Length: 259
Image (cartoon, rainbow, N blue to C red; front, top):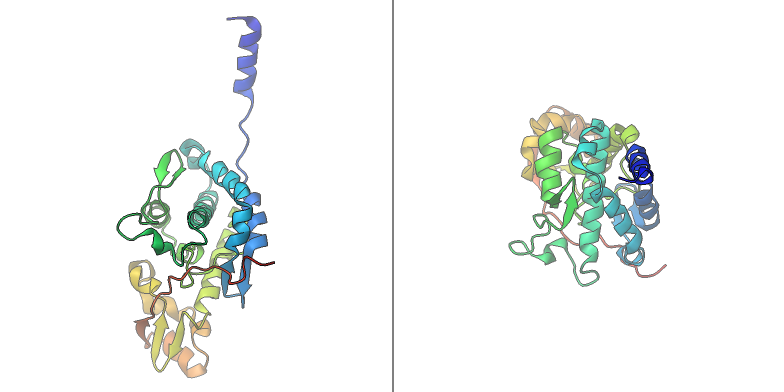
């Protein structure tokens, strides 16, 4: 081998790979521009605006897909979880844009054929992946953190809000707890009324993640009940649990096509 070529190969091998941006700055810039907060407890997304900036979204998604499993495995728990949560949310937005504005729900892709949650429509950590793979096979299985349910956004009004900022390792604990409190304080989706806790269907679908549920909700009694008697009932675990209809309507901001 030519000495110059050999030297070049050695130099390239010694050059460190570009480190992944754990601040998720590209995703942050997009979210700050297109997420519309509703009372601080819910949000909608300006999909029409995201569509205009889809090239930037694609670059961010490519940066996620470029991370090899070997690099991911060397990260901290917080870095891994933030990466997976942001990936889920960003790839969900990209999925919606595949048919926007010609859909009213993510389920318009189909529940049997074309299921948007089971479709392996992107690459992550060296494999073809689906949204369900991130949520059920990875986050819920490997991290055992029930508050991820508040962080993952399924592009639906019934879902916990899409946060107006990315999840980042240094703030992950505070962000997850803030998301929990935002969701549980939203009386349109969780509330105490007439001796019952009327709750999001999430707590029925994933009840094993929140057991014992009465004890779990007791910790948030101040958010779920408006009066002292109600808070006492929730705190004591005496409220009967019922579950509300889930709203799968697209979380599009109604005037997202106008500035």
